Image (cartoon, rainbow, N blue to C red):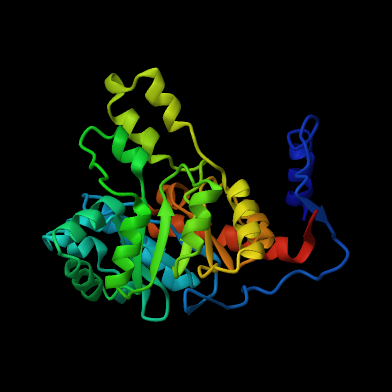
Length: 330
């Protein structure tokens, strides 16, 4: 206790909040709850039972680092009861050279959601080549619960080696879903979507919509950073167009409330979620069942020793528990 009191004295001035602003998203109610239980309550999502409302948003695959990263992430999902989206599985359509990087079902277990991932450009090409059976074979090989389709026209346009879309993503999605009966999640890759795109997607029988909102990893900007000599001022400005998770959620809530044609009724809120409080706030605001997704934040801790990732997720869970006990939305 003496050491603790000495720490309090030494740190008091450093912790002084002279110019800081309190987080105005919440009321802090310290009198109405005991300290929370050690575990979060299980809940249903994507047709399975989760224990932690954090989604591993699709990141990487087919590189020398991917195997270790995905293994660490899958271990964390199994330990904490989370779901996982694999990085782009494009390389698996024609070769199994990198299959081990993605083969995470035995690690994550059968009871948690594991989704493969392809871009809308690959789906368009497969439809044109009458080769959608490759997707079904890939899902079977991975023992995946379904497929994430990432919508990335801006990224592809800014990528020197990018693919060209010949049809609108909506046309491609609709035709794909007529032929593939696996559960489908649709996401953006860092710029989010406006209300018309959200409404169009929510009318489809998707398993879930993932935001990929502006404010987190922005793959359009990444492409410009890969080739800075080709990034003119106009293109740089285009990479900064987008919609954050808060405004996307407002639109989704309104569509869910007022549009009787809505079929997609689960959300993965991702993009700019830098803390458990960001995730908690948005999940509580959602009118639909929702969890929050992270990509770069998890990636940062998944590249090294597993214990680093474990500690990071444990801290988020503790934060979510304390938020549930003591915070109300304003």
